[in-house]
Length: 107
Ligand SMILES: [Zn+2]
Image 1 (cartoon, rainbow, N blue to C red):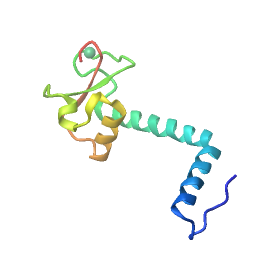
Image 2 (cartoon, rainbow, N blue to C red):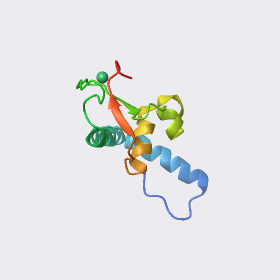
Image 3 (tube, helix red, strand yellow):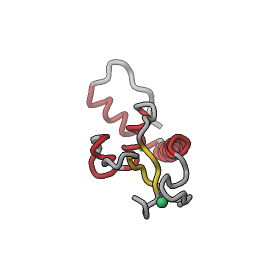
Image 4 (cartoon, rainbow, N blue to C red):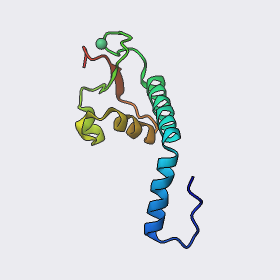
């Protein structure tokens, strides 16, 4: 396991320490990421619902959509319909109104 870096390390040494740390903690990092994603997904569903806002289906896979029919990407500025980036965007803005969950059929 890498030792803690001293304050007088160069930028290069810090980078190398970071890489060694990530390698040594790879499994724990993966576990933390999965936990954080689960929390983000749960929080999104708690805020916007776990059923389709249009047909009421409780499909396993729900997508975020705009209540007013606008494009989510247009409102958030996140290209490519990146669902995780969109959830983080919503969380970071205090879960704003105007978004709903819809099933793939109703999207
Ligand atoms: Zn639906």
